[in-house]
Length: 210
Image (cartoon, rainbow, N blue to C red; front, side, top):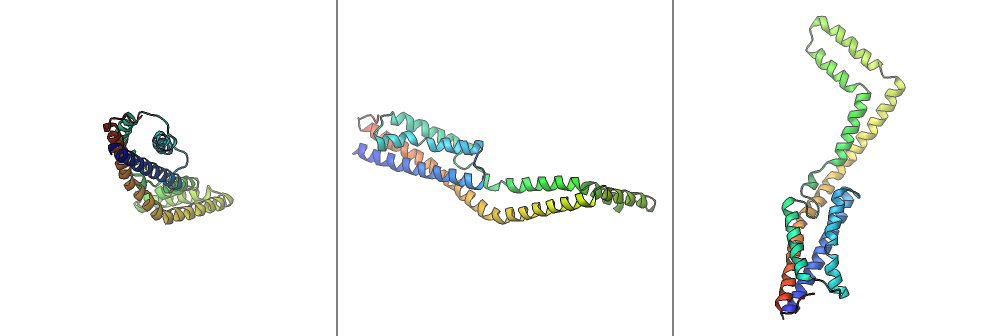
């Protein structure tokens, strides 16, 4: 009885863990990055289920109870560290928008935007005697960029602003999907402990699960 029930728990836990881990991997690859250390970490977590799948469906021999103990411990540590499944806080990441903002800042530097803004700040608080000198510096800074370069930089800025609007438009759906994935991480812990419970019940039957 214990062995049959234990195998059922082991089966449910393994299938649930594998399905949730694969879903986490696909969600992360779609919304964050296809190739990254975090992607590799989730892929390794998916691979944890493979020996158990081989045991259940291919009849491979393995020390199930020691493996289940090790797996439950590892999953618990990853959960505490916020690295289980889709890492905790991923939904708050703004990587695409941050990259676009950095690119816009670079284009702004090329257009002397920062220099001109600094001069305008000085102009706002300047005395009458200094205003003409500062206004002259602003004109010189504006003339440093040729009409051709200015047109090209303005076009580049317009493209970046359009990309920023698109990233902002997609961010709500992206954030919702990642938050749902982060909440599903708790199910990975439950699945790992179902695996452990099943392996323990099989071992208690007096017939080692290996």
